[in-house]
Amino acid sequence: MDGRGDRAERVYRHLRDAVLDGRLRRGERLPATRELAERLGVSRSTVSTAYERLTAEGYLVARVGSGTFVALPASVAAAASSRGAGAGRAGSGGRALPAPAWRDLADPLWVEPRPIAYDFSVGSPDPALFSHDAWRRSVAAALRGPALRRAHYADPSGLERLRAGIARHLGLSRSVAATVDEVVVTSGAQQAFDLLGRTLLRPGDTVAVEDPGYPPVRQLLELLGARVVPVPVDEHGLRVDLLPSARMVYVTPSHQFPLGGVLSLERRTALLDWARRHDAVVIEDDYDSEFRFGARALDPLQRLDGEGRVVYVGTFSKTMLPGLRLGFVVAPPSLVPALRSAKRLTDWHNDVVTQTAMASLLDSGAFAAHVRRASRVYEERHALIGREAAALLRGRLEAVPSAAGLHLALVPGADVSFDSARVAEAAATAGVAVQPLPRFAVTAGWEGLLLGFGSIAAEDIPDGMRLLAEAAGRTHAW
Image (cartoon, rainbow, N blue to C red; front, side, top):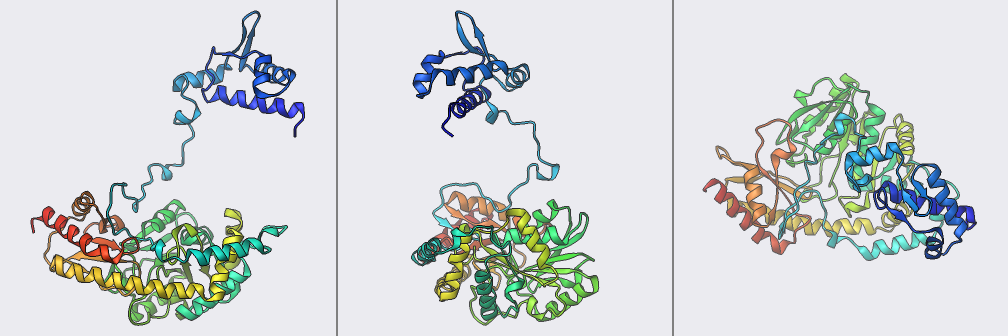
């Protein structure tokens, strides 16, 4: 790789790229071959070879007695002229356009960064509760082991040890009935939904989603070509009686996102009956299910499913760190081969070091211990927000009963007029980050606020709630 030809190739590419991105402009004189060779520490013949090739291709022009100058090929010059001299490729905007569905696609969960002192953002666990030392030890052990010494790519379904640990953990903590062969490891829950959409849906298929619900799933399914139908929810979760005929339904039965209600046993039975009658698949998103406050949750839909129609999705991103990007699917055996193929064609497999480290945490009991510790902290914050809301908002905004997760929903009391967006904006100005409930709804008429407690310490909650109450009072003249 150090021969003269290779060095000439590198010189050629550097000069060509400098011309194309505008660092070397049309008409600019280049150094003499001897001078540039001395600068680069190469032979003069190496630079001469590069110059000759660039000249032959029209990037340079040699003028006898004057030197060598930049002279773009006609097509390149026209493109450069249209975007402005020296603008370069990066500043051109570009003629390559995404498909219409991808243009101006908004992120409903994104909020404009601003100085925030009290962060009630939704969807993030507290990184301070994560055992960084335990994770570093697990990663270090994985690096010393055989994980990176494999001669071949790993199983797209995930390392067998990790899949066995997930199946065992879910059986103990959530009564999920799963074998190691029914688990597929994914890059977070979002990739799980993507794989399921790709393997289950054809363009034009109908998918039912909760309204209000989780926008990234709805957007993803629409981009995959599905006809997405929002179905109302109430305090008991999805209105199963309003489900249309559909190929798939996405549901959060353990604590509905974002309101927090639990799908009743009666509705669970009705949902499974609906799936049987319509030959449909139920996607059960059991997000944040590890963090429960109070009585044990109802068994998941997957446990009640006797026909293999329910696909269970979970993630470690919410229990540990969002940046971990490690999720999983528990699927009926009939679906696993397709999911495995879709995973292979998407990114082949998850990072084996991360998988090995996570398997170690599951095997050692460190993950279960982390969940127990974090649950106690989150339960305190959950209760504190509820008490502060009752004391400061006096029924104007009421906390929706919820016994799990990392956020609470506050909705207006009876006959209370409320503008969620205005209050969220006023709160942000005061240094308090909350998210308006309408951001998560398809149909109009929903008002309220979502308050997460994964990013705020318990001692900061009273002051944050006071500022939020003052912002709501100013906005509505309470």
